Image (cartoon, each protein chain N blue to C red):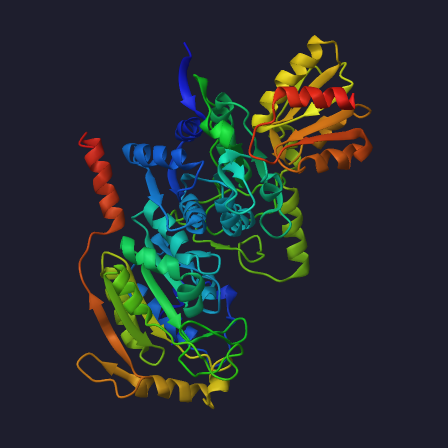
Length: 268
Length: 371
């Protein structure tokens, strides 16, 4: 299972820190398989992450990797991409990381339509700090800071990115990890800001408090609640998988290069 | 022949940054530093560089660190409230040893304070604004000429010592227009690149220089950068021995270079019984006050720390036994360093915190009072 992608890992850093049953490992495999399929030059691939369980991923991977501050992966990535557009920049974020403390950066990376491939690993909870409610924790579900059920309502991160100007949005899950590989490939191929939501399971900090007896139950939940374009959601918990939106718009670094070109030709 | 120009302080910072080789600027509008961003927006695309206006101060700091890791020299500029926001990623740049220059054109605070008035109230924020034990370099120009020269030095120090350097200006110096003579030849320092092959390179090597060589992202080295305490390879660790060695190097890495980092100006100190200590815009008034004092026969001198962090303690210690008057546009920040060295009985203060400049006459009056 692992040998096909071992060349993309810093194997001396394994085993990883994730709990048994966590979905991040499966998702890591799916993302790395996308890079393998794309046959990207490891020396030109950058992995940027914020803070949280999912943000530990780049440390295990054999690329140029940077584990930044909480919520700030996108502006670090923006600096890298704007300075060196020829680099392939992947951004790994968690749900709290990208939608709470980093929510503003998500809006503006989308608005700029800068060519980053961003992946939000959504496990509905702050896992690393022990299970606090995040902006993507469903209504009524329990976390350590919503011991009586979450009073607040989550938002759809892909809808936010779409409204703000992102040009590609897609969703898969740890269960649908082969689909995830395909979507990450499509996201990479989109010349603009692409966001892939990877629904994941956190058995320890979320599942235990929300009536999931085993990690397998959570994977089955992902299987049963996913639907495809053209199908109908049967309940509020259902989520659409596959490509959610795709459109064309000017990309930031290309526009900036056009500006440089124009100025060089004295047309400023 | 040297080229003389009339320039504003903020403009001189931008020009000097370009001369030093800056290729990337990320910023957010804030008075009284905005002219730096405006100048960079105009100039950087012309030379193949990049200007980007970010969504906030935090993002600006993040962007210049990311860009710097790809090998370009990077700059951001702000003022007190924005400097507070930058502290998070300023700490990240210190921890990960990424060169960059951060300009803070100080204004009155706390909070929104006096946006268009000068102050020197971020002295301690420049030193200890970000959490944790850490080294920092902060330079304080007193003239437009010095804005130019110190900006170049700030880039050189950032590159040589793998550290963010703060150019701690104030509203007066930022907006002052005066003559600048552009140096014909500049000393430009670039970061030391590793000469080891990728397999052997250690981005946080504990070598005898205390400053590890760098490798740019995208050039085949594929190393890890993290704000977590890390090994010499850059990977996270919680090992106390490794942590101790890393923190010792990090916190002491400037020590071998203090003599070059700690810039000071000294005037009439040989026979001075009273030494006025002042920096930034305040040093201009202090200089005039010392001149006036001398003209009436008072033995007064001026010690101007140009580098305020790391504080030039050894250079000032030469004057043990004298009396000191520390003049600052805050309620007493750098004075603590001088009191720490000589004891509070040897040190007098003059402070002003109403957004108005301290005048030479005020300083002269105070000199007469304490003499």
